[in-house]
Image (cartoon, rainbow, N blue to C red; front, top):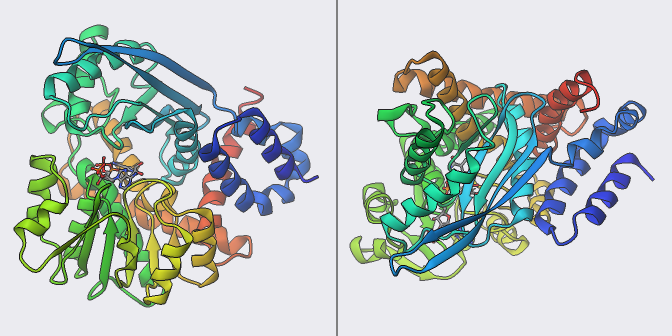
Length: 444
Ligand code: NDP
């Protein structure tokens, strides 16, 4: 049996009931088979894949807090510190009722390769809790964040592990988490990224994932003799990534005609008005259906189905496994030429294989959404230097990083004979640096 198959079997046996983690490991190992087969003896002798697929540490803890009715609530918090071969653990915190160990391990595993691809010195981690901030008062969110950080602060630090936001964790939550960290440890240090601009945050961090997604999409289109100008774009989600992807796509001359949330999607043939979306989502934390009530001519549809809207470019920016095989078929039938993942693993394996088979330009999340973590690393650099760079300076660095990620993924794919397969290319390029560092550091 090949080394890859052996390790995959072991991962499934040792991590029962963790389908998302199995899915992420399988996708990565399958596309690394070319590299691993070429170095099989060497990698086996140092147990490289066994170590790569086992998190360095998983911390799981009780998060008790009191709700507005005076009732005690208990959630479960986690931090998965996956791999620190190339730098301190770095990766977001997700607050969502679906959070469990499998999802955080899948996200932490993906993060290792993504962070490596950015070219910056950051290892991979992920964390969060099965807490749902939706419908909670500000005081409840603060009480939860303070309790969560009271435990988490024992395991993180500016040179050790630097969490950021993810689903359900935005500027408000990062503020409460940072305040509690500082209060307990007495340290004013860059322990979290995504901070507010008045206390160590970086310009462009809010926009970074969405902008970065569009920069790499434009670069991929450019190499195919195309560009975003004049293209029709469909984006799922209406959170941080979706909103800023829509903003940058619009700035580059594309027309974004649809956005969604977990209840349904809106279609606006004239192009979505982002000022209205921002007011609904960023100011009032409302639902996307309200857009159709405010903008005449737009339509709201309850439920799934956003991928049936004809478009040239599709940017899934909501959550994992949201674009299935039938969605991929609808996109292809409607003439879509490009799919780039703003969310983590939004496209199922079958859908990804179908899109690659149909020769669409396809950029996987670990390359396409790496602009967020890359800008977080730029925030860490500014915090260490006790300096703040201008918007233009950070944006320019972000753009260069995204173009460089495209080049790395394209180059690795070409080197291993799978030209334009950016799924394989991104995995291979991310893997090479981590594997090299793990080899150099011995069996740890
Ligand atoms: P937000 O919480 O800001 O937004 C998430 C959006 O996705 C919301 O519109 C939400 O709708 C929708 N959504 C969530 N779960 C589901 C679901 N099960 N079905 C349909 N829609 C859903 O998160 P972000 O924009 O920050 O993150 C989106 C994705 O991007 C995630 O996969 C995240 O891991 C990834 N990502 C984020 C980065 C960042 O910097 N923020 C960096 C890299 C990746 P609703 O409001 O109804 O829940």
